[in-house]
Amino acid sequence: MQSSSTSGETLKDGTYTGSDSSYEFGDIQVQIVVANGKISKVTAIKYPTDNQKTQSINENAIPTYEASAVKSQSASFSNISGATKTWEAFTESLKTAINDAG
Image (cartoon, rainbow, N blue to C red; front, side, top):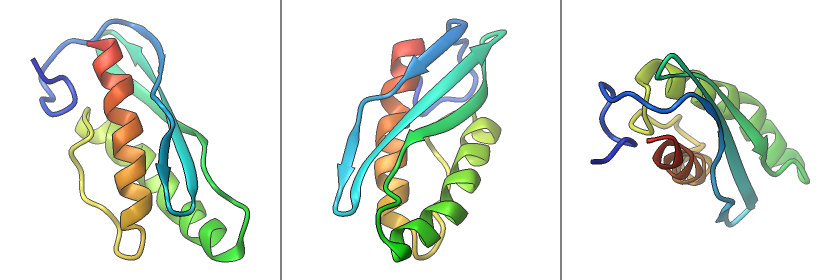
């Protein structure tokens, strides 16, 4: 059963933190809150902000990815052009959090 890819599954209520996911600019770590069996909140609790380019990309991409994860109730959503590496690391961490909740 893959809770990271199917949106109709019921998850266990609670807060779950995904594993650190490394990419060329640093680490991303995602935390989810599950309420009533659904993802109610997704927060990137760690992401790189140490250089201007990365900060600029992430301040635009991270909120979009957080909202997309809640909307899709999964780690299956589209990336933003120019933020593919961020998306890859974000969804990798997100999948581990969802799997923990499943």
